[in-house]
Length: 481
Image 1 (cartoon, helix red, strand yellow):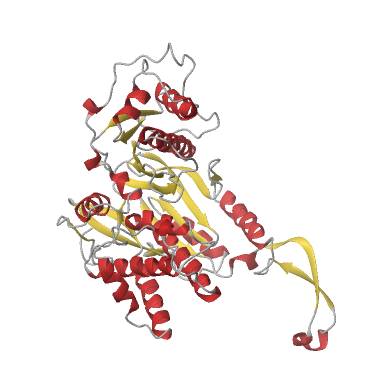
Image 2: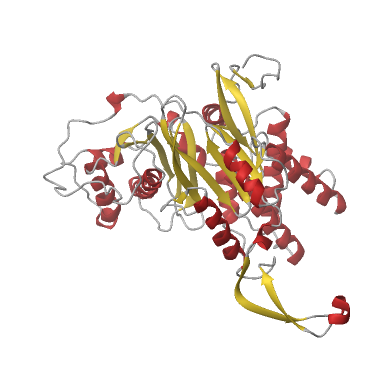
């Protein structure tokens, strides 16, 4: 399918105010100064303007034959058929005034939107979206879309260097980056153990700002810094000088990776992830243990159209990794087909006495996220092929999750235990053990990961070092398509 994007200019002003709002005109209104004036348009700055614009644009999309998804009201669907007879759902995805249209022929709908609203530029295949670089590449002869934070990171690093230069420390980024070697953190650095002086108000504000920048970079696909950013985000209430230095190290790491051509580029790969079926225990009967377990299928979901997809998941936990509280850290990566779609790295809310407990908590979190994603895909009209494959590197957890006759010895883990087992019984998931060497979720739990393993995981996620990937060049107008 083709993808086209547009941006509606002065979007809010197209909508009428949702309430009766008045103001007294100031001297800038000339002879009308002092008059009471009604505000009839959803001006930028009014609390209800965003909702007014959304309701107004929803009427337009309804008029074009699209209906909102129950799972995400800003994803609009419409049954469509390609010229070869292939049925699918055309989609319009709306993020405030940014519009993405997915269709085998995007022009008619984009021309209709252009006839109603003033677009900032002509609708076209996107090269930027919400700060991300959108590119097309060729992999094994097929064209793929990719998403990266290349320009966002480059401008963010430049801003940090400019700020440090204004502070009279132009070489600080490089100076502290060298201490970290080729990794975001020095291997021995623990933010929770940092006892350096507290930051003053100005530096603390800068720390919060840079955390926000890095968190958005993670949203745009920088999975390789997710753990470090998560650890530093835990100290926003009381940041210290060492924490700010650690932030600078991460920016130095990002600039270094980009200069080496190691761009964190998510490749939207529609091929199915290859899975060894021998990893799974298929000779199981859960009926005696969970006789009523079955996956809840939404009653009001649209009829599936298009090809089915396979969902896979890697899950891991770093037991008692926080030296101040001894809480563990969870890491989860969820794939749809061969593309990472969800990545999660966060400190757990409880202290677990064993690695079994921390891994079981992480598996419970992964199960809840999988259930939510499967619901969302179904409400988008996407058919899901079988249970979600979940890969974990703790044999005890896999045994308790996949063998019905196994028993639990720790009562306080019983909620996680039964939630995961019931999901397995309902064929929502199936859990398999893999060697820790192949667990991609390690990237989201361990800041002490070796450079070799970190690069190996990034090779799988982003294609670092692959020679079969090259930019897509669109055919010229005089070339036979």
